[in-house]
Length: 157
Image (cartoon, rainbow, N blue to C red; front, side, top):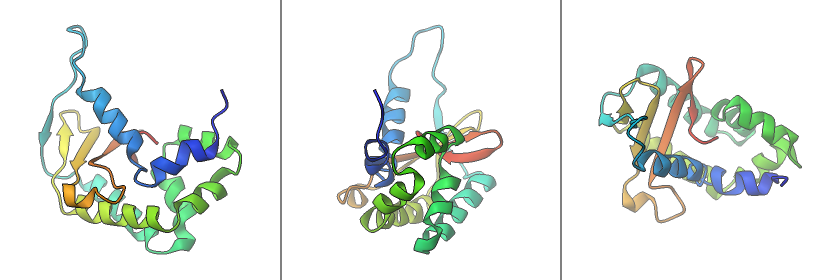
């Protein structure tokens, strides 16, 4: 079944951009078979490279003309390739992201930058809880980031 850009990006980029991350978190919290134990998360100090990634996201988010660069920076290469093949491409994702979705991301990033992450022991996964008062406007309850090929990405994107 062909996935449309709206279906792929409306909810995720609403932060909602993290609904995929929440789904990934839910999957991670399911009990796994004894042969493949799920790594435990523990609260720790935010890695410097993750802080730098989040800071750059925040900087790109400050101006609407940077939204394309933000999207290209935050999502995994595989997701970006899918997005570019979709009807409307990156331009459609930017259109859908403007306004409330961008504001939601700003608030979540502000919170995350002041928080301590829950880290996996291998250092390749970081999850942040978003306080309830920040989730009533379509913002996620959790947001997660994964490190692949030496850099961080928003999980699930």
